[in-house]
Image: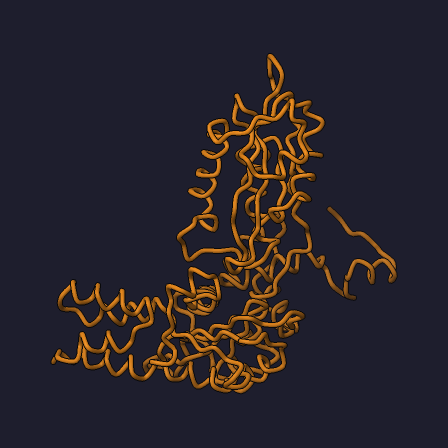
Length: 436
């Protein structure tokens, strides 16, 4: 396109540093791609997406000179998960490669990973504000729990053994399926002693190892059924495992090997593990994403427009933090007219009602929730579940196609922003027919 000269004041406002040929947004795009694939592949992806060729060496220099700050939490951390991954180290010629461990801590406010520098991980976590109690989730690995023991105080921590790892270790025992199902039901209720009695007479080494595993983590096995039903906290460490998979996609590229000193923290001129983890955890796009909350295309309705209105329950982070989707559909076509997010209160419905006013709706069909009768004209309002079948079916479609809305799933939203954005993008694409 050519060159564009800007003044020093303009460069300060646009965050353009001196002697740079790339815009801040293009640099962020390069860093995002380099964080997931090799530099050579990132060069091809940037050229395909933008039409601009950024050589692989240039992208490597972008990473080397970028300083990745550790995430900082403004809110109290309620949960954290600890786990580890593997990195492949470069060895002298004709010697076998070595795989070494690194550790990662994922919280509801950010993620940090480090190679062979656990004290730095612990120091970062202990500088953040904690809720009371602080839920600590992990599998049965000793090294992971050694890190947890250094976080906060014993009275403040609520240590929970990952249910899915516990279940996985149970089924490694093998043998009678009936006994395994009985043991799973007992452990789901936190009954360790009863579970031990089922395997005390077993002579297999796997059964003896599992009994030792239960005794070792007895105080970390809770009533998972109660904790999940009440939404007290998570029962699995999926958050940290997801972060590790994201890091492994970059550092375990086929054939990739890393020098030990370049994996160590504090090496400024390398793609060290904490840098990548912090970048992946805190990367934000400078271009905002906007979604419509109301249908602007005219509907071809031969007579008065009728609408069904209902609210759908969901949650963010934990079930006690409810997030309701209020939306209205045109009764004949089933098209979504408008939607809002909020609590199950009159305020949220009033916002939805304001969005529906331009449609000139002649009849509203709802259930018997009080907000509707308080704010809708009785002459235009008809109550009854038999009149809201289409919008209830719309709820079923949403829960089927968006996994975070399913009632029985390990997938859930961690932030209100992402929760509203994912559902909003889905409605924009498949209901409003907008390109996203």
